[in-house]
Structures are given as C-alpha cells and as structure tokens.
Image (cartoon, rainbow, N blue to C red; front, side, top):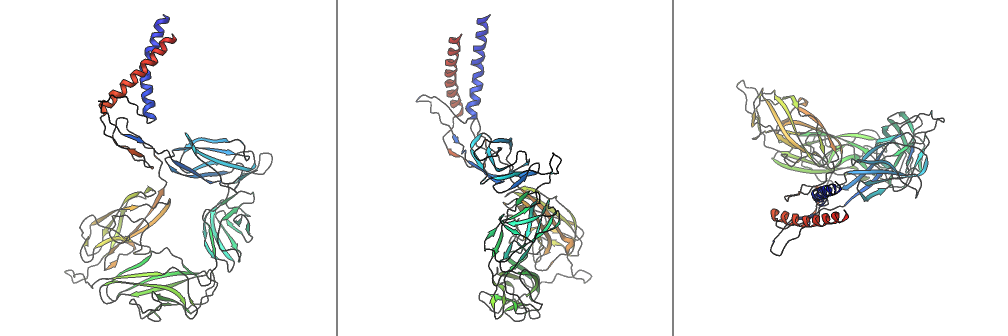
Length: 565
C-alpha cells in the first residue's frame, strides 16, 4: 500500500510539474531551449522595460490635516504602474504603517485621517510588486487633533481652493483676490507661501471668500494657502504671480492667436475686447489701440466712422482706469475692396507716454468676391436659417484621445445648404466666432475653426442635415466646453438657433501592462516601448526542443523523488 502511494505521488509530480514549470517559464518571460547543431531553431526574444516612477503630490510637506477629516492622497506615475501600496510614517525614521495594501493607480485615494496626531508625518507610495518604484513626501506634514474633547467634537472637512482671480498681479498696490473653493468656514484666512498672512481675508459663504495681497511683495511666484479656524488647510496648486509693472495690460478673454473675419468687400467686422490695467500708471483718454510692426503704420483695415486715425483703431473716451480695473473697447475693421487675405497687428498705447506691455492682437480679414444668391421664383433673396434638432451626448475621453460627435439642424431657410461651391455651409467655432479650438482634430476643414460640412452634399429647405466630426482631447485632464454654429462661408453666420455646445470630459488614461504571446506573434501595445531583438520563428521545432529539455529536467526530478522513498 505504501509503495503504491509513493508511485502515485511520483507520477503526479512528474505529470503536474510540467504544467507548473510551463506557467513559470511563460510568466517570467524566460524561454529555455536546448538544440543540436543542425536544429536551426530561431525565435523572438522580447525584453520588457521594467521602468516607471511614482511621485507623491499631496501631502508633500507643510499640510495640516485634522484627525477624522476626509483628505485625498494624490500622486502621478510614469510607465506601466497598475496598482500602488500607500503607507504612512508618523515619526522621522520610524516604521511604516499600511493605509491601503493595493489600490488602482488612478492618481488619487480618499483617506479619513487616523490617530495619533503628529507633526512628522510622511506618505510613501510604492508600485505593488516592485519596491524600486516608490516615492515619499518631500517634507513632513502634520496630523492634528480635531478638537471637541471626549470624542464628541465635530470634524469638518479641510477647505480647498478651486480658482483665484486675478492670478497675475502687480506689487505696486494692494490687490483683492476673488477666491472660489469648498468647505470655507467663518473665520477662514489665507497666506502666501504659508508665511505671509493676508490680513484682510473675508468669508462670504462656504464656497466664496476674498483676501487682499499687500503692496511691495517680491516679484515672483507665490503659493496660496487656505486655513479654517480648526487648523485644517490645503494649498492651491496654481501659483499667484506677482510682477513689477509700469505700463502693463492684459486682454481678459480667451481669444485665438489670430482674430479672423470672413467678409465681402467693404463689409465690416466687430469684436469687443476687455482690457485690465496691470500697471501702476492710470489710463485716461490718451489710451488708444495703435498699429504695430511697424509702429504707427496706416492700416488697410481702417474704418473711418470709428477709428480716430488710420493708425489708431480705438480711442478711449471714458474716465480714469486705475490698477486692476477693466474696460471694454470695441474694435471694428472694414474689408478692403479687393479679394484676398489681409493681416494687421495692434497694441494699446498711451499717446505721448508709452506703448503698453501686452500680447499683440492679430487680426486677419479674408475678403471674398461679392456674390449675390440667385432670386427665387417669387423674386425674393434666398435666406439662410436653421433650427437645432438633436446632438450626440457629452463625451468622456482619455487625455490625448479622440471622440466622435454629431449634430442635426433643420434647414428652415429658402437657400439649400451645399458642401462646396461659392457659399458652402459649414460647422464653425462660435463664442467667439472663428476662434481656433483647443479640441481641433486633423480631419477638420480649415484653420482649427471649421469643423465639417453636412454628411449630405445638399440639404434642401425643410430637410435635416447631420454634421459628424471628431475632436482631439488635450493632454491635460478637465472639462472643456466647446461651442459650434453654422456659417454660410463668405455670406453670413446663422442665428443662435443654429448653435450648440458640448462639455467634453478629459480623463486620465488607465495604465495597461502589455502581454507577450506564448506561441509567437506580435506584442500588444504598452505605454513603454520594449527593447526587441528579432529572430526567425520556427515554432513547432522550438517547442519540440523545449519539451525535450523539460522532460529531461522532469526525469531528473522524478529520480530524485524515487530516491527519497
């Protein structure tokens, strides 16, 4: 009976070790073969790059988190990190305690802060399965008591900042910051670099507050901290930039690099430009929008009714404009009589004082030949109008990826919509019209501001036209709002009833590990590029040789087990 049992286990081990060793060989990407001189065995050997990195973002030093409060531990990675281990150290040089043994590498982990309190806490984040891919907070942070005594205290979440305006300020005069965020409480206060108290901090509600930056601070980037009265605090990731200015202006609008108008000869285009005074010199009626490159040249876009002179496109006529104040100046340009493309550049100037430091404004006018649409049988001029029907839902796309969108409009005018010809009807960017989109795709028609024509070559009055197109997501995550509307090129923009928008959510891509096929073939793509050495592959002969080698190993192992019994 004993010998039969021994023989059973020996046969079992011989039979099952084959499977175990095969799994180990494939799993560790090791290919073992033994061949004679005449075997002519060739194969493909792929070596994966094991590189990657983890960087702790928060807490990264200086924070103060209350026990029991909800906080987000955040990080970023490179390479193919799939899951991470998060640990905490409460004394410098002390032991590490696990917060979570394994969590998906999505860049953020919600943590309810635990006892005990300490002023020497650090966070360590490590790739699960690879202890060499790791990072620790750059400096210690504090875990503080939530207060209340006897375990009956109320724990409030830490305040956080979402947006601050303005984010670039002058050190010539005190500046009030408008601060938006969450979890603000009565008594909330702010600091720059956690050292300069902004004494005039004002609580408005749990999402709104203001703070005054004093004059005279050094011209550099500062980080804004927010504190509640219980000591809980966070830091805003975007710096406040303080500059020393004399004659500075900022255009307070997200305009394209080139403001473009499509006009017929003698037609006019108009846009309102909001400017903020970021210098210490008060603006007055000497403020003009002048031509540059070269300075003070006569512009071909001159509009006699609104321009003071041929080299001054706008003349300000209002009251004094001090530091931080914003004014709106309307710019009107007139198309020349000849068809073509005309470009000019402008900057603000205080006549007799100085040109202001600002980003130049570039205006391009594309002039087409005057074309009148043919009359209808009733003698009326053809009209362009549309009504919104339906559109695709708001997409969710990974950073750098693309999404397919569509929108349908009913032709409620008397002119057919054509995809080509003298006045093709296209979907273009609006809010501001003709601006270049951050979501432009390589398949768009013109200059990042003309998206597509209708799917059908002609959309007759009363019919519904569908406009399908793609967008390319930026590499930065967030929610991007984009507006589009219909335009009959070189003729007119449709009314607002022919406009629509999408809110496009751009998210972080999911890390994916690549797999090497076990029987040859191509490798699936991975975020990091493997180093590959290529040979010819005779798979059947290779596996025959591998099997012979493994059988020899198993025979030796079987003999070893028999000797034990």
